Length: 158
Image (cartoon, rainbow, N blue to C red):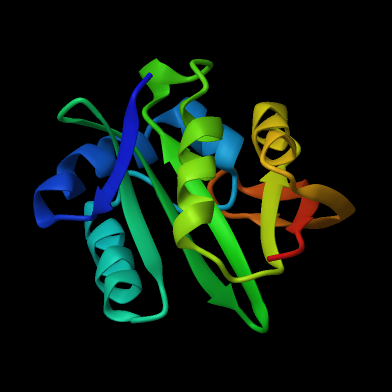
C-alpha cells in the first residue's frame, strides 16, 4: 500500500474519534481514556496534545483517505511513539510501513514504544522497525479497567 504522512487537521478528528472508541481497538491499546466514547474527553485530549509544540502528530494516508495516526511525545525524559490504525485495515502492514516513514521524521533516539500484552501484532511492528524489547511493566489501563502487562521497547542509534 502506498502511504504518506501529513499533518493532523481539524477535519480528521471525527474519523479518529470513531477509531479510538472502537471496542476491539480499545482492548488492544488498553491505555486509553477511561471512557473512550466520551467525545468531550477526546476533544480535550487532542486540544492538549496539539497545543504541546514538542508533540509530533501525523495522519497516515493511503490515496486521499486517512487510515491511521502516528505520533511521538515526551513522557518524563523518554521520547515515546504511539500509532492507531483504522480497525478495518488491521493486518495489512500499514503500521509497519507508517512507522518506517515516521522514523525518518522523528529522529530523536533513543525512542521508546510500549505495547499492551493484548496487542502482540504491535510488538511485531516495532521489531520490524528495529526496536528491541528491553523489559516489561504493568500498569492500570483505564480503557479496559484493569492492570495490564506492557512490553517495553527501545530504538537506539541515530
